[in-house]
Image (tube, rainbow, N blue to C red):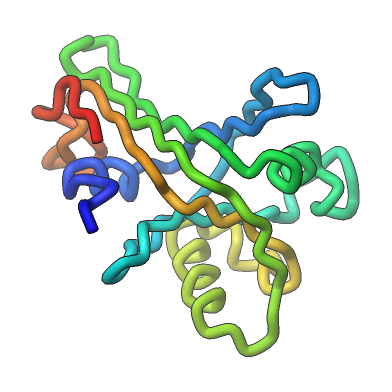
Length: 170
């Protein structure tokens, strides 16, 4: 199986703190929401998957399953994510666009894989330490295609981008 993400694209994605998730609303307009996430690399024939929790931040509804993005995903699972880096130095501009299929993963007792994902979310985002992510659904996005532009190579400071990758398509 051909890699969906290059090593440079994976590093750029992993180093990003947020992404923008685009779902398709019933009126066919894109619905955009900023998200926190972690990436689980694919193994063997499994493509990489991005996980984003439906956390305890204030929402428009008390049941996360009633959120517009969740309704959109249930009806139209094709999604796009955008991770970008802005800089006043335009030689540092970069973005990574991911196309994939999203699904809602319901919480399950004794699920070792979900426990690892939740642990990684808490390691990346300390705000999640006190949230009951184990009792809430998580959105899983199976990555099908990635397109990147700009300077997506990780820098020495540990943030995405200093060189390389202009116009890279996968």
